[in-house]
Length: 124
Image 1: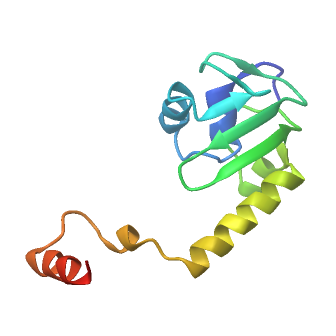
Image 2: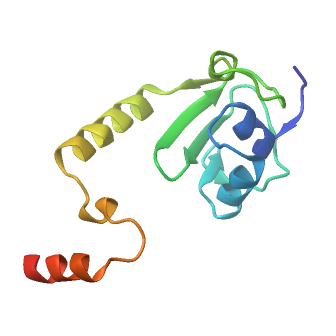
């Protein structure tokens, strides 16, 4: 394991994003913070850094426990960080809300058909 790793490589290696380019895009959009500060893709990750991550589907708050620039299996990636208790609780609450309240827009895929539009108009 190397000492200095860029944040985009670390997020990819820790399996928060499928590609480094997706990780870099999230960083550029301000969806990743290190120690509650916005960062750039060139920022290096250090042990015990607190990282806030919004990958689009979930929000994580993790503490860095290991530094690696190589993507490995999920069990190895899990050893690179430790999720905070607040983050675990928040993600569980969000999952429960999604289970009880289904967003109507999630059922739509792409542009609505004429039939879909009629059903939407009737429901209003």
